[in-house]
Length: 280
Ligand code: UDP
Image (cartoon, rainbow, N blue to C red; front, side, top):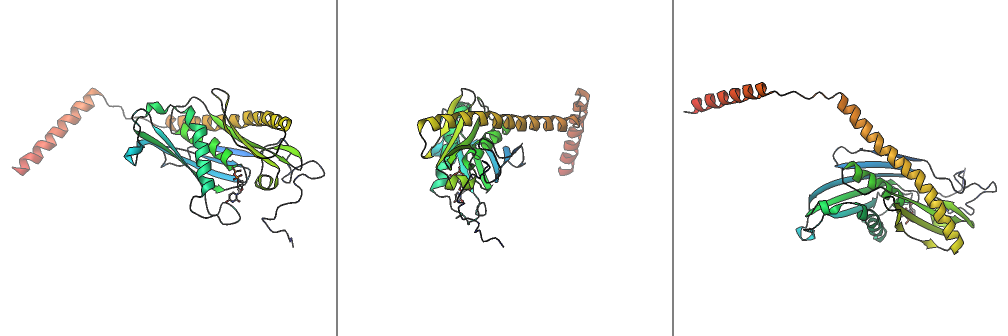
């Protein structure tokens, strides 16, 4: 019987063989799976599985702003809501949104907002609801990646995609894509997002200690990883469009000719007249 309590922090995060606890190399990403268009009731949606993270994003809008005084006559506004479900981590999370959720909602909004053409939607709001069903480190990065896919699915015009990943330092070694354990017990955590249309950093946070050389090296590793993740995002979007095209192949629109229309008007007039006669 294992005496390891589930939330106990491991003493060493890198084994004798140089591998991490989950068997990854230092610069290896966790498996990532993305799907676009997963929530029929939303205007746009996406799902991501990234290691132990499972996250849905749903977009509603552009729609009327409530309260009305938040509306801007010159542009639309973007609202993002990052939430972790109570069962997303091993120790039950309080249901009310805490300071951390508000902060993550804000950093995701700040990363995404500049790439959207919000000036096309005056007096409107676009809302992105992001639900973390299962969390295992790097959720703000996974949420940023999935939120931009949901916005693309909703047809919101954008200058380009945003991709994010966290680098870190554990047992004195630089790593990419920190898991929950590595995030909690490591020496540094460096989440970073890039906006591809101008190759600018869209999000950069830092928690821990690294020297400048390590920081530079981490940024290089981040860029290499981000290129891989962007390809997955693009594939997920392309697949969505192929699915829609396949669906439309079987769609046979009813052809309405001028004759049909005249017949229909005649029959409607006839029906109205009969109804009128009966009432008289
Ligand atoms: N976490 C947790 N309980 C909480 C908040 C976070 O167990 O109330 C875990 C969760 O796995 C999360 C990780 O701690 O992914 C790291 O959280 P952090 O605040 O660094 O944000 P993230 O790395 O998820 O963006």
